[in-house]
Image (cartoon, rainbow over all chains, first blue to last red; front, side, top):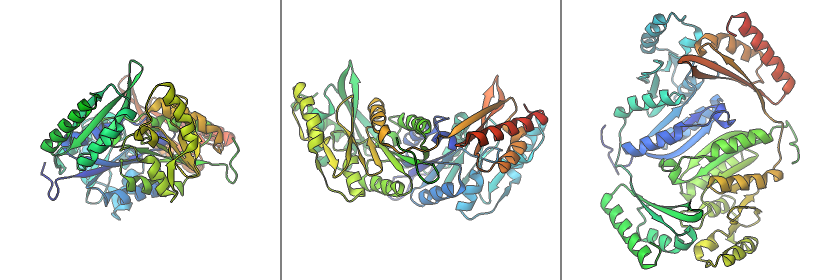
Length: 250
Length: 250
């Protein structure tokens, strides 16, 4: 991985494509996985959209987000059936042509032949790749993902999405890793909001979040401080702990 | 619930607000729940966005989606700490004023007094409601959600979100319910794509999706046909089953 230039921050968005997520039939498992992966490798996930299997909606989301973030990951809609329209939608978003790609066919043909499967028009459909895109290896079921400029198109099936994400990761520019410190309190959020809000003002570059939880049926709070600068993060966390202790809240 | 006028379709979007979802720290449980709920009551969920705790991002998402869909549900960011900026962002999106609301205070004050809790500025923050919004009851922790025209602002904590969603549901206009028929096949998607795609063309108003699964380590397929018209749905499903049977695929 190369390191990001400018401010050291690399950003991304995710577009989940699929009527089945919006109808509730399928519960998405990819957003949380990609979020964890991005945080781990030093990419800041800034936005997620879930859109239906409608070409205009996919094109609009891709074009809105690919200009705003360093990378856009899409999941879903690259299978062999008529409702799999992601590849064509990506081509349309970039105004590129799309056709059966010889590199993808070179992967798929021997895979089907070994299994005695006919190369149906549906299976050919999985070899349709936008012109100029790079392929992304699929070590589970062969049909590849692809990367069109900064848009990374992955499968929707979680285990296939995950091997594709691993395969493309070495090609991604990454930035400083966002680090975090958590502080668990036995007080409810309402009791600590004053001290906490004041401390945020003292460290505007260290985003601080407060998350209510319950322990033994009592409202508790987890505070999370985040920064790409470990020294600044340590200073902000130590300062907050001191203030909470002084106020009898830690 | 009143019935939708015009074409009988009522649409919605969801905006999930929170850095903790985008960082991967918290895995969202609300999208799938709201999706199921919408499908059950006759509202079609068309789009979801997850945005960070940045006012401009929230305002932009609210203003983009509230004009496009009948309802917008937001989750998260209505607690007492400085990172809870949803109420102010909604007010800004609608260009409405926002202040501590006497109706919300009438709920919160006795709740705090009974528990001997001080009404801190943080707790007062949970009574800030955009001018003209209707309150949504919170039977778990009292601090209310609210409905600003067609935008429904709910808590992020799943069990609190769920009671608020139940509380607001009788106020929502609903449409024809989307019904579905599933057909399980022992064939992989690539084998059925031709028949399936042709059948979709014969019934353009019945969206048909294909979802790959694995049974006994063998690739299988679930087909799902959806329509708000039960007669049309039954006809399309029966026709598809006949074609699959004739092709030796069912």
